[in-house]
Amino acid sequence: MHFYVILRILGILLMIFSITQLPPLGVSLFYDDATHWAFISAFAITLATGFIIWVPVYTAKQELSIRDGFLVTVLFWTVLGVFGSLPLMLAESPGLTAVDAVFESISGLTTTGATVMTGLDKLPHSILYYRQQLQWLGGMGIIVLAVAILPMLGIGGMQLYRAEAPGPVKDNKLTPRITETAKALWYIYLSLTIACAAAYWLAGMTPFDAIGHSFSTVAIGGFSTHDASIGHFDSAIIESIGIFFMVVAGINFGLHFFAWRHHTLTHYLKDPEVQFYLSLLGLVILLTLFVLVMTHTYPAVEALRKAAFMVVSVATTTGYATADFAHWPAMLPFMLFVLAFVGGCASSTAGGMKAIRVLLILKQGYREILRLIHPNAVIPVKLGQRPIPDRILQAVWGFFSVYLIVFVVMLIALLATGLDQITAWSAVGATLNNLGPGLGDVSAHFGGLNPTAKWILCLAMLLGRLEVFTMLVLFTPAFWRR
Image (tube, rainbow, N blue to C red):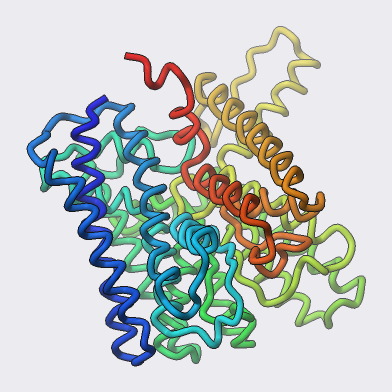
């Protein structure tokens, strides 16, 4: 382990992160909301801490190992979650406690969207903007952004990219150089954000709301500048725009890069994961619509509008709301919540286990059924026309089993804090899948939970954002063994 190099990277990244306090400072000054000192203080504390960490080790220059990459990734998300909470603690409004501020900050950076805050419509504009900005930065992963910058500072970034990039296959690069890969991802991400903001603005949002909601839509975060979320605007056009960009952001960004580079869209419909992802969304929307109409919950047209938006919002783990799906009839709340476990595509900004993993599990399950009928047959698992190596299938099953074990352990831990079963089950699912809203006592917000439960859920959000293994590997003796 190259601890001096790790400290140098952490110091540099903290100093870079301090710059993110300046845009909300500008918003505070523009709206004169008397919150500017919180951002000035947070900027100074973060910059000074990063500088103090960096100075003693600034000459350390060595190539990162894989283990270094894992440690830096976990440290960075954890440290940023803590330092990102400073404005929320220092500002008179909302003036959160330490646990609430860290929870809100980690929820933003991991694009979970679970909140402990209420009365959003009365909060200062700068605080509202800051929450949205946290999600936008976390959406693609601040590590990927750092990978584009760090090579200029003499630090290799491939190890960081492998540790942070979501999905079952870590070694695919869009361009030959990792720096160019990170830049390409950010250009696409930025372009989608600008297009989304423009669409929201043309549909009737104020520029402030349009920018804020574009941040959390493309990041698949779910934070809003209003208590009623997207439902505040009561606009079918705005909801349609949200659906489109949530679906797009939930697709593998490698496919977006291919479309941008080769000026084609046909490859989207040829991709097995996208086919599964869109088919699942369509099927659940139709089933939800059928139940809402048959139970007379809404008139037919309104039922279609509610079903389409809420299914896409929950399935992509965005967490926007135009209706309280937790109180929908029959099996709908449970079905939608389970859908979030699938999430979006690999290498997207969505949470969950990722559609590609679930698709491979289903295909392997079907293969086992066929093997019962034909015990001696050689039946490969294929995606499209390409057979999948057993090594990847084993990795998928390993991820699935560990994911469930982590879920059960955290569920037991929350039950031990005194939460009821529905609240505890949905709170773990909402945070581990980076979804946001849950069921029971966390259907609206997480503010009523006890501090111990909130710390547990902070860990769940980090585990979900880093896809479990990146963090769990740090707790194995083999990781620290020379």
